[in-house]
Length: 121
Image 1 (spheres, rainbow, N blue to C red):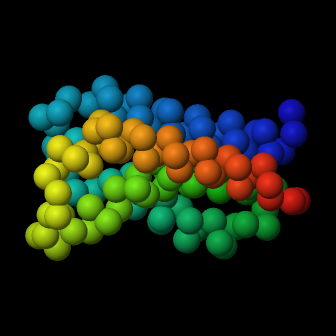
Image 2: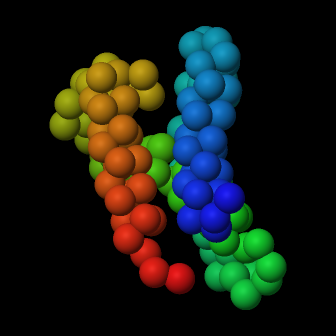
């Protein structure tokens, strides 16, 4: 299997595993209702990645990072607005399982795969 295919597989698996694991968390759990999201873990890992990017197989760590970030990036403006106490739309519009969230994440995944396939390395 080529490096690009492995990268895409890890990227997609990260999103699917994240979505599935969050689906298993009860909606009343503090883990589900807190303001800490896995995009923050992705950003923290991205900072770490810049220190290890020349190591063997670090590109697969990057695939995991980008999966965590891509899964939530479309809701980032709404998270920031919510943290600042300003909600331009109701929570039901952008929450994790809303049609907006699912469709926008799917669009980001498709765009990401097109860019990954077009990347020359």
